Image (cartoon, rainbow, N blue to C red; front, side):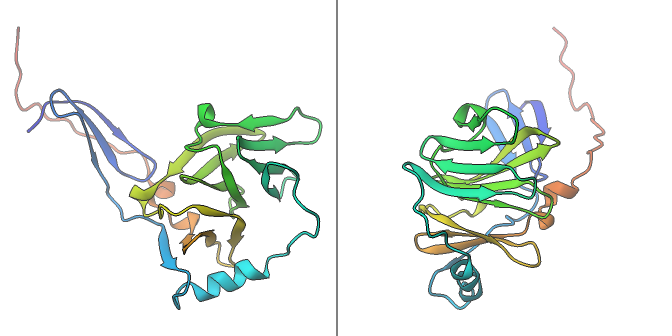
Length: 202
């Protein structure tokens, strides 16, 4: 076995092992919560119908704005080609970019889940923004290794179903997931009982 010198659990219940000679190892404890279906499939049909029924604004979006979303707090989110812009009453405009945790700065769609967290589709995966009070305190990214298609996402095509399932559309597929079913949300503190296998004294 490789010499392990660090260990960390992530929000999905996976374990990361840092080793001396074999690099960084990862074990995923749970299957991906993301599902994707071809646009023309029977599984995608009800989701496509919901996306098609979304209200479409008559006015044209401003230049370099891909989408606009107003959440339950009254905050306005703008998806741009250079990051996510947040406008809040009485506060300065905030721009969220790669340095804040975005995996890609081209934002295509924005939606809010039942826990009032914000999800955005980018040109390279999906990102969840954890919000507590007035603070965005963490960004969590999901990419093709999490069963996110490599297709480009479509501007403004995101919706939330009655059961809390979120739907986002790529060029060729529909991506669905329910944040309430994420194992990481129920993943408590892990109690470890380390066991010394070999002690080397220099």
